[in-house]
Length: 57
Image 1 (cartoon, rainbow, N blue to C red):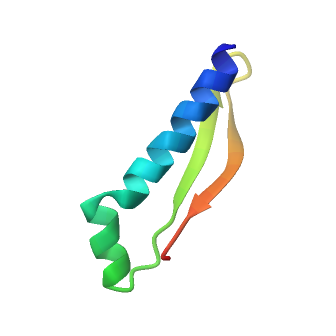
Image 2 (image 1 turned 90 degrees about the vertical axis):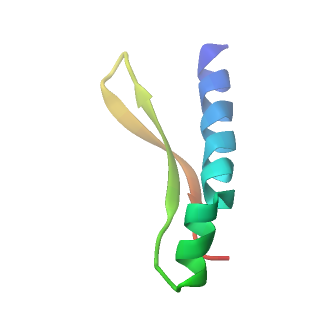
């Protein structure tokens, strides 16, 4: 199912971004930055929040 693959990809990319040097440095400096996992649905033209949010750990 394509939808499941897209959602799985978003989850992995949120993790990759959160682990990136840029995000790690921002959090180390105390910046209040979060990464959210959303999917754009072509059929409806809407954004769907997958409920994935990563912030300073």
